[in-house]
Image: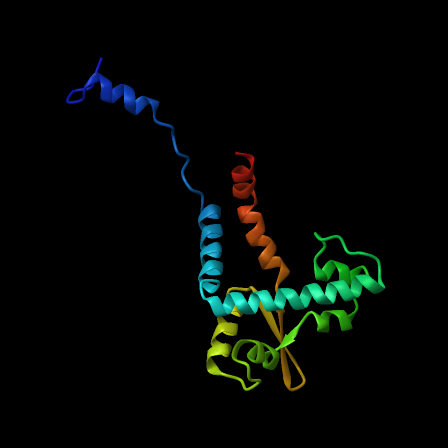
Length: 163
């Protein structure tokens, strides 16, 4: 029998609707982390910086692979270094100085506040690390953060590819 004020059709329709599970705190935290990543990546200049750092890391890996055993693509730099596949020199080759990044972005090695701002945003999001090496600051990608992003979207992309 229909509830008071509702027709039998609307009650039937309501009972057929799928129950959506309630979000968990872990899902909310993961969504917040992804939002911070995408906010950092929402600027074209930052995407160019990430792309250039990726090319630099790929070049360093290729040079390392030519000398040592091949590294499995899933192996990150830290594990490869622990295994002896990558030397400290290779890690330095995977990095770019802030001056090199300025040269790539602006065409001049002079530091600009704009480039520093972009690097700060990428560092804050955890996408890059910056370390001091004497009078230079060296930047490189943070593979753990990129892997986190890939893991977050892996199931979504698998589902899309499967359809």
